[in-house]
Amino acid sequence: MSKSIMIVICDFLLLSLLSLANFENPVNAEEEQAKKQQAEVAAQQRFADSQLLDLLKLSLDNERDKRMALSGDVERLSEAAKKNQEMAVQTKQMLAQREAEISRLADTKKALEAEKAQILVKSAELEKRVADSEQRNMQLQSRIVSVSANLEESAATRARLEKQLGEMKDVDSTTKLKLERVQAELKQHKENLEKLRAESEVLKNENRAIELEKNALATQLEVASTKTKIYEENLKRFQTIVDVEKTEKEKMREHAENLAAGVSELAASQKEISGAVREMRPKTSSEIFEGIRKSFVRVVFNYKRNGLLGLTDSSLEFKSIPVKIGADTWLIFVATDTMLSPSIRKYYPPENMNVSVLGKAFRFQPNAIYSVGTDPRLLAIKVPAKFCENEKIEAIALPSNFFAFSDCVVVDPDKSYYGQVPFRADFKDPSYAQMDVGLLQSVFGTFAPSDGDLVFSRNGEFMGLMLGGDVAVLLKSFGLSRALPVGKDYTPSQAESFVGDTSNRLKKMPFSLR
Image 1: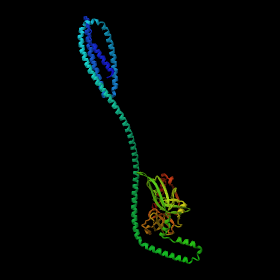
Image 2: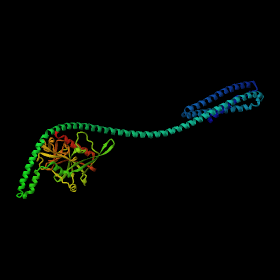
Image 3: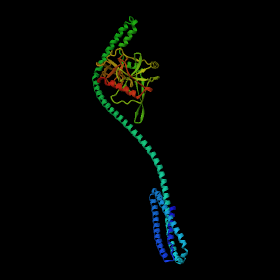
Image 4: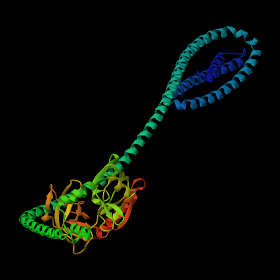
């Protein structure tokens, strides 16, 4: 119980005791005055009792309000304390007045001794009333103790709530950290989702490209079936061609015998004559393949592409043959064997690219790949002279006359298949030749000409490469169009520009040669 409330209760108890006192004058006037004072004291007693009850009710109401709302109790208690202090000041003033009256009445005490008996009777009544007041006081004290206990319980509850609030703040901070982590993970998932969507679009584009390629393969299958019928129709012509070839060989043998008869006369020009004979005598497919078989080298592309699981390592490998063009040696191959093939669709370059050329015992890594000016689908790598010397490889030369023979030899370097094919010059562009694949003869293995196959003259010289099943590009005029750095100097933007340039060149070519 607060100190101010205790002071107020004591003040009211003191006023109650003073109100019970009856000081009657011996004369009638004083009796009337005493009656008036008794009436006033009774009124004051009733007022004090009512004020005391009101005060107790106010205190109980305040305690109940404290239990209902802890946050507003302190403020209301402070206001009640201020009011109680004001009431205490008023009570003190009243007590000062009463003390003045008591000092005045003390002077008349001697005159009141005659009325002592009556006062004793009234004193007994007052004692009874005091006993009643003490009983009520004890009840009030018990109520005050109960209210104090409730107040302490409320304080303990408040402390417990404050502790729970602190724990909730800690949990809230932990929850915030978890929420931030979850938001970061959600952001990462969103980024991954965007990447997956982008890669999904790429896969969709690739699926469309695959569908187009399937359609193209279906068309090629129909063409192949038509060619098969042509093969069957031309089987009868093979025997006639073989007979003609035998006749030509017999004539050449007779011519060689005639030349041998005049060897003594032509001894000075024997080397020139033998060279001319070698130039004039066509080699068989087996002779040509045996001559070039040891000159093959391996070209390996290692690159990285972005996929669903990030960067993935990939590689591809094919065979090529060194070709002597002017003073330099080159490896010529088609772009369809690599990831640099011209395309009408959007091109996605690799993140990096390394190229290696491997012989039997030595290797080298070129710094650049060149686009050949004759056709945008051809690529070239320059071969160091020491590489051929170390590998003991003799580069194949270009023929002086590409159309000296009516047929040529086509070699598949990867499968080591070959065959002899008649061909004719393209009347629109002499750099291309039309292959009569329906007359394919002297075949080794299950062989059908395709992209990247090497084309050799019947004297064993390198003519060009196949582009499709029935068109060959001839290296009659060799030139370089553009270079793409590889290895440490490679960048995806350069590869994209390189393929874009070759794709534009391919679009400008006649449709029949694409």
